[in-house]
Length: 267
Image 1 (cartoon, rainbow, N blue to C red):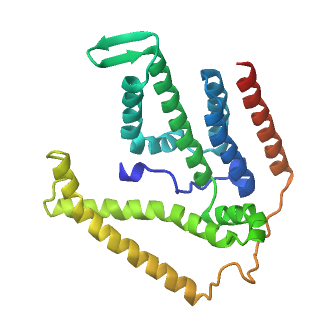
Image 2 (spheres, helix red, strand yellow):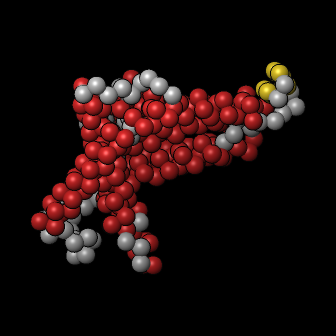
Image 3 (cartoon, helix red, strand yellow):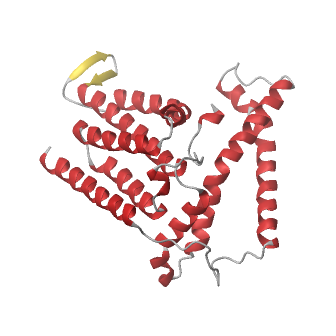
């Protein structure tokens, strides 16, 4: 399951989505995430799912690889589903036993939240799978340029966010190696109650923290050795420019926003 997390990974391909400007993909991802919280009906979710499916097909990323990232949030999805089933009040009671009440409104709310959560993870994964860390850094930095006028360190924020995303696969791989090493020494992470399992995680967390700090120190040393000094007086080898396909993508984003607004108003 450790290797099933796809957020932060990059899947190389020669698709149109990979060639788009990272700023356009950031805008599209932000619009998609906001739209999931704006719409509150199955027609809106169906429209968002259709657009997401088209983007996955265009990206040429295997669907199995894309959906593999959902394995890591199965527990969260199940917990959210159960919580909304038994907590949400409603008028149409489907099942009642003592203090346990399941209503139609609770079932519908649970399904909607699960759909929203799944599409949120897949949509966010699509951004990192089709965008290299360098492109993502440049896109975030250019998007935060207007905030520089009020003293916001745009480059530093973009660099920190990208490094955090980039190190997710590295830390997951390191965690997997530590787990296998501890299991080879006789550690048991699957039996016992919840408290015992939590205690058994200590042999994993301690070396993982040590390894993380060591990698962070090595990265800082490497950046200092290359005279890195933030955004001050920095130039770029490849200057970001919009082209025709980026403007076409922005046009489709506008159409998506219009579709979401119409669904929100009339449905």
